[in-house]
Amino acid sequence: MNMSPNFLSTLDSASSLGLVLFSCCLYGGAAVWIGAHLAGWLAPPPWQAVAWSEPTTDAAAERIAAAHWFGAPRPPVPPSLQLSGVFAVGKPDGAGFAIAEVGGRLQWLAAGTEVDGWQVAHIAADGIELARGPYRHFYPLSMLPAASDIIPDASGDMPPLPDSSGDAS
Image (cartoon, rainbow, N blue to C red):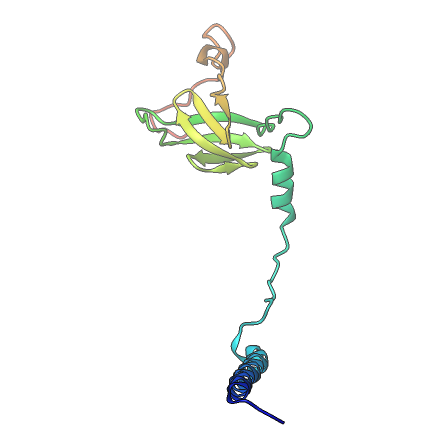
């Protein structure tokens, strides 16, 4: 067997190249294996639980109603009230109060007071204005009968006036 020195040098460089490739694969495989096992400890979980909040039925109903699926929205019906008196003389800012019959009983109403879902927006000398969202409704002051309709004239039968002299009989 005749081996030339050139063949040995080729064999030596091939074996060292093989040794380098083998060691690279060994170290690379070890790095991948270690990384795969340490990733579970060092990395965040791939998913996180999210707490879902249940939507309120009122919010869902408001959202559906705002969509106007069945045509233009109808304005809400204003409350039934009879305005008896307004005390807002000389107050252009709407301050003051009013007396109204709501649901069969007298209530005093100030600016900001709520009546059946409507809010008193403005009090004027001739009535009050209630608001609910973009809708507004004005209630005029009830016209009371004139004093001549209440007090009979002198020709009619009137009871005698009490004596103001202080004599008790």
